[in-house]
Image (cartoon, rainbow, N blue to C red):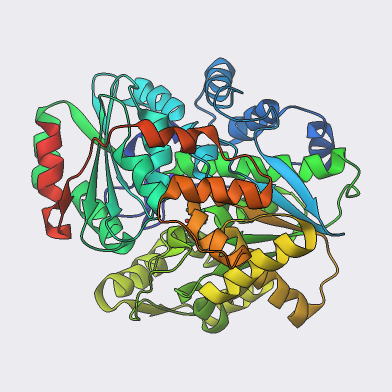
Amino acid sequence: MNYRSTRNSACQVTAAEAITRGISAEGGLFVPESLPRISPEELASLAGQSYQQKAEFVLSRFLTDFTPEELRACVNGAYTTEKFDSEEISQLAKVGDQTYFLELWHGPTCAFKDMALQLLPYLLTTSARKTAPDEEIVVLVATSGDTGKAALEGFKDVPGTRMLVFYPENGVSAMQKLQMTTQQGENVAVCAIQGNFDDAQSGVKKIFTDPQVLEELARRHQRFSSANSINWGRLVPQIVYYVAAYTSLMEQGEIQPGEEVNVVVPTGNFGNILAAYYAKHMGVPFGKLICASNRNNVLTDFLDTGIYDRNREFYATTSPSMDILISSNLERLLYELCGRDDAVIREWFGQLAEEGVYEVSEEVKEKLADEFWGGFCDDEGAASAIAETFGEYGYLCDPHTAVAVQVYEDYLEATEDPRKTIIASTASPYKFNDTVLAAITDEPVPEDPFAQAEMLARLSGLTPPDSLMALKDRPVRFTGSTAPAGMVDQVKAMLG
Ligand SMILES: *Cc1c(COP(=O)(O)O)cnc(C)c1O
């Protein structure tokens, strides 16, 4: 199986190339040239297998230039019970009669990014051995809060790699910031930027294609790669958990083989929901894909009108990992929906870069309406969803997952769709203690994030994750901060 760039169909590379490069030279994203199919019989036979076995099965369909032994080593290195707090790796929690929370935050950094970023270093180093054996891989990361920590944790002290993470100085929770500024590992660094996630992401994309920087790297036998969801190696592990979740529901007798299940995903960069779309089109019987946004509702408007318009105010919300106005992975979806026409993608994304807006064709609008339903809610809506889910079911969700809960309620009201539904639960509530506490109690909330965690534990009866509580005693290592224009200098400084 080869991969193509969304902006140049003539550019064809192997999976290992796609993963090592991260992004195509002309700025396009790598996509598989066709989607492999999973038959109903294969789905049935996956039911009962371990998460690792399911992962090997899905990955082998996409990474055909990896040997079975290489894939097994990658999967078994990533998904261990040392790193994840249960053998299931991801967990399903049934709440009410027809809703299942797919908890994707049982990894080392307590957000769903671990599902992909524990595996990515293995995929990337295996890929680099095939395509660039003598080069050091320099991974640049722009984070809206969770990717940064998950990437740092995945790549710390991985030989042959270096990493620099940029996060928005005032755009992450106290716990998220501490997670990054106290990161250990000799090959990693972290820098705040005086801007938002979109500034960080645009800055990184620009550095990736800066000829002067690239020349300097080549001289040093280094090359860039990406740990953001623009890297195919981030997306393919995310397809795994949707296949795993569906087959787990079959295993548990919750659904009949072939039964359609909706999926609700709290969305920012469109990576997680795109993985659900891919799983559906490989043969997993998913119904509607419900795209839940916070007040930065550029995707809701896009799904309603077919016009993507980023020229709008940016809001800092209580679900910071979704505070994004440029959803990169939408490009991959639109490439599929417009019949894999790279000229069309170049036109739309050229307009986005120049004017901040583009409009898709009528045909694409119809396809979008067929597959997706979009909704959004503000911070108050998310807070009341946290309170109601906790009050009614004793189930505590984080503010991102709460956005999905609220939008799903709106969806049910609008459609009365009776199908069972998976809600992607993307972070531990303990990463966002202050918001969760404010939603469930009138008691005064302490300032200190660890005192907050203890209070949340007392009120909810849920044990706080050890990995978060351990941050209390870690020294802060990274205090640097830069304007977006200074990012390139930070990169040069890191290179030495
Ligand atoms: C990253 C993130 C999201 C958004 O996921 P995308 O793949 O960017 O759409 C949602 N919730 C949490 C907690 C996240 O960390």
